[in-house]
Length: 74
Image (cartoon, rainbow, N blue to C red; front, side, top):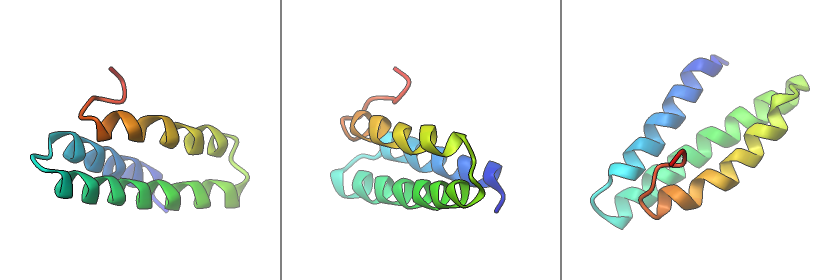
């Protein structure tokens, strides 16, 4: 798995959700981001990667902020 590509796709989905003009589009993009995050998490856990736990936790923190239309880093 190309993690850099997956991280990039995840970021694009989150940015798309933040820029969405309606709830259906926002939720669809968040679902895409969540799916990508799950794939990354499973891959990292399968390798025993230490970052896997931090990555998984970050997804739960970032999603509510994006759903409200705010940047997860703001």
